[in-house]
Image 1: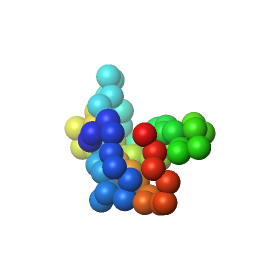
Image 2 (image 1 turned 180 degrees about the vertical axis):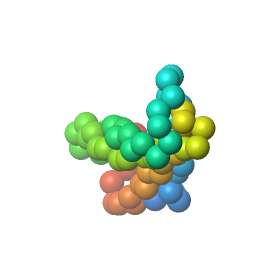
Image 3 (image 1 turned 90 degrees about the vertical axis):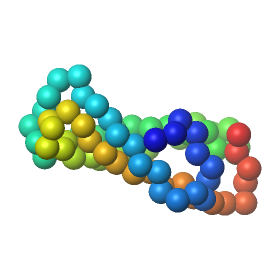
Length: 71
């Protein structure tokens, strides 16, 4: 997925690739961060499941449209 998204856009899909294989179906926890309009740095987590190839996992991030302009 893109490095930058516009808030309120549709859900954005990302894929991560592991450097070493993991068992299919393993759950990985991923952290991502962003900066709010007020300058706060926020870090959140999401989970993804390792696919049948043992090295990739796909996850989505939803953006929230609000009245503040970030960026």
